[in-house]
Length: 183
Image (cartoon, rainbow, N blue to C red; front, side, top):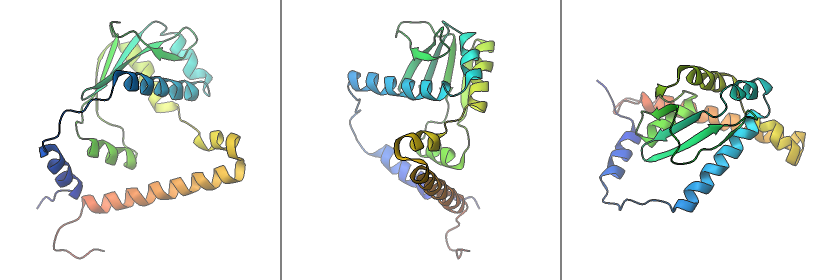
């Protein structure tokens, strides 16, 4: 007998609510996209090989989309990213196929990559795949610059413990069968 996650029940309930189609203002979307680009560039600048790979793709435009959200990234000659003009034609389109925000959050917490449909330039797709596989943000190092080594390490360990506990909880919740005792 297959059981449903309690999160899927909650999501189904939320989707049935007659809420108006709320859209953030264009300026807020643009500012959020700029912050994402700044974060991506910060992470890329910590890995010279990543920047070298992006230099080879300069001028290429990548469209990232999920549901109604999307933004275009441009590979710059410096090996970084910038927002592309809205009218720029995309050389690579990456569409997250999972529609459910709950399922995406659960997958992210488990450490799984979301399912993505990729269309367009094969070489650019290979470079983006390499970036996803090899470039990681060392958050602890960035925190250490701001607050010192010991507090940064402590905060990082707490975050790892919280993430591990949350993963265990989600794994148990996914296998929960009503009427059975918890182990």
